[in-house]
Image 1 (cartoon, one colour):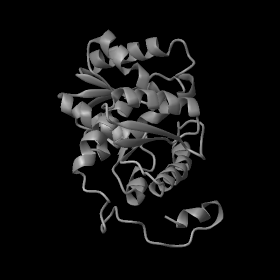
Image 2 (cartoon, helix red, strand yellow):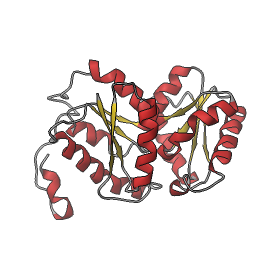
Image 3 (tube, one colour):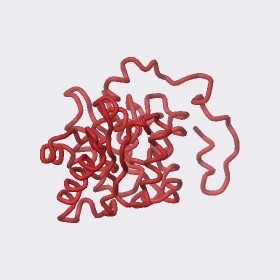
Length: 246
């Protein structure tokens, strides 16, 4: 099985980190193919960033779809799940967002969960997704560590700050598990879990494991009709002119 991990931002070092975490979580017969978006923001920390990240995500899926050996599933490795619905319309394989995957696994752990994310301004998007994915009743708290995305790799205090935030979330929220709210935290989940003595769920690993389970039973290519069928053909102009060719 080949899973394409798409980093919706343009920072290659973050793609490399997430690919390593994804490969460590994958089964022995799974290959992780990392793709860094060819266009868009260096990191995604606002609604504006997220909107402008979507064309790069769609371009990556379109390019893989027509490759000689297309991947069997796609993972959108940003916790805002940017462009997830649009990606599902054009893909010929399952597309998983790391926020939806992480929250689904947290729900299966049992009881309530907390989310620990990057900047405070992203909490609104995380809250919106808990409602969209039907787990708002299980999410007992949303917390920010206030470390910018691109500083997660370079700040020497990142692990300590995140560990403290996760431990406090468990206590303050009365949660049974913690979801990490950024793909750039993917390499820290196991170590933080060991330190706080509770499940800490990374969406990259969660999405890879769910993709491995989903591919054999998903019945792709995707639906021929309905909401996730191919978008109707039409003219696109300006910088988006190339996107009319799906």
